[in-house]
Length: 301
Image: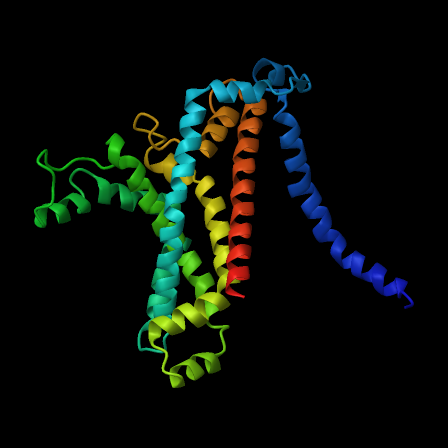
């Protein structure tokens, strides 16, 4: 087959701007950041304008011996606990608002509001909810569910702060995944549902036998996005607790942020190494997600 070189050249011409932007703002920072993870670069060396010095795996040995990094990585992995609940809740609500009932448009918009709400504004609201004299304690008190010690600050307690911040993460991400699931649900042909109804299938059978198999690509996408997002939790923690109390909400990305941009050392080498560890964990979980969905698809077929 004869190649149309003019058409090929024109295609690459249109692709070139996007490829250049990807190379400059994605691939180069990724490659350079990976390189910095194996170097000493920061503090006095950075201030004197000296180039990075190759140190091999020294940064990773430092991370392995750092109790704060191990705690932060464990906290980030614990955030993954919210992923299954977030996916189930988002899919369930998307199935409900997908119905053609009065008021569904309002609920679709309302559930998406947290996604577009400024984290600063959301933090003020949630700080009031979790305050010792705030809404949550008032509701629990009205229901006589407060502990014997009385009202307490949910963000100031080591045992509750992590779960309180996790709930904010759930609240912020819920609407985003609901919209993705809603888009997937609306692409399912109505004829399949109608045929199943005629065959006598109930609502649960239609959902499990028709909706879930056809939604697997969307479920995989949302699962991957939420897994990566769980490992990248930063803003909620910075604004609400700043990693406290006693590092109970300190995340791996927060460790990277403080090592790179806080204090006077600006240890870019150690921060880059920590970022690489988080990236490897995210990659491993993504591969596990793909394998899980591939195996389940094979069993269903």
